[in-house]
Figure 1 (tube, one colour):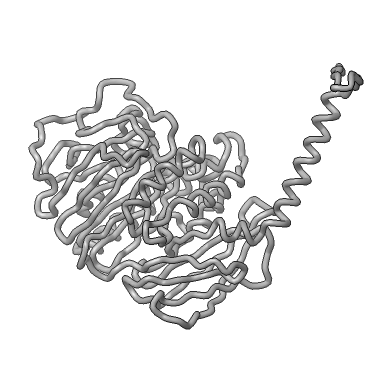
Figure 2 (spheres, helix red, strand yellow; figure 1 turned 135 degrees about the vertical axis):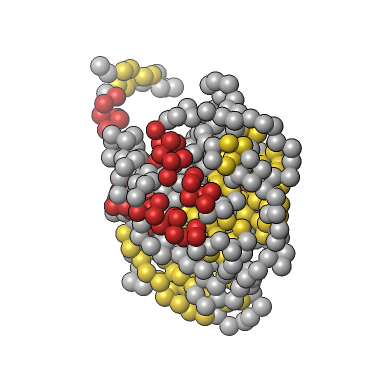
Length: 433
């Protein structure tokens, strides 16, 4: 059916919506390809971000996205107090599942600990700043933790990013469901543009007040790979390309000299919870008994705030990982997936205990509407709030301080652990199922 329009000159004209829509579609496709061909350098400068593959005190991995494949990747860097630039080469490879984008990677090694560096990529004269991590806790160290990021509008995520950056963290821990860049579990669809938008937002907003880029360490979530659960690393190529690790198994442990170890775990997405991952977890925990601070981060919670306590995935994690955490004297675990804020009491052998492990979560960085409790608040929860948030962690040699803030920077919860006594506060005599 055609539609009649009348112009100001009273001249009528007709068009068929289907043909007009077809023209608009072709024009849109043309504009997309034209845009990709024109803004390669701009895309590079808008997507630069930092991560680590090895020692955070002496290395830094710098990555960015481009829309064209350069013959070689070059980067220049120097200490902020030096004048001479050092030139290094990197690698470039296809963005998985996309013919339109490329990932550029340069790993800087043999850096000085606790030192500020300036760098610039060859295709752009804009300079960026970063700082390596210190070798010891001579002063407090701060990092931010959260997950379930680009769930709704990108502005919601940016709001929390800006508040997190204001706290001047040394790095960010992200617990999965980063860009929500895949379709439903039964639809093998990759939403590449969501990853590009997420990278731009991260680059734009995760900058300290001193102008330094904030490195990211990421654990995988169900919305970060095709199939969501019970897959293999082959289905997680985008995640492993954007957040490369020394190993190829998606899970890893980062050691910050002898004062901090962080386990990045895969809660059943590209690797099974049990078996090889649990064996590795037990071994690496035993090897790090003398590390001052020990944390784990993963996506699906062992102690959910919203989902049923006995759901299959949480039960598996409690069966295989929680005993390893307890035997390995883990201090705290960061959980996600449930889209609300929670802090448990210290838990040991499924009971509240002053020497137990603290579980914090539950992933609501970019959630427009945090979830509400469906039933009575579980007795293992010391605090529950249905709110968008990020967790700020500050470490001293003998203390761990946790603070939760909302999108306005307002504190909504705080908690301190002394390493001599996991929980100095009074704990009610409560158990849970």
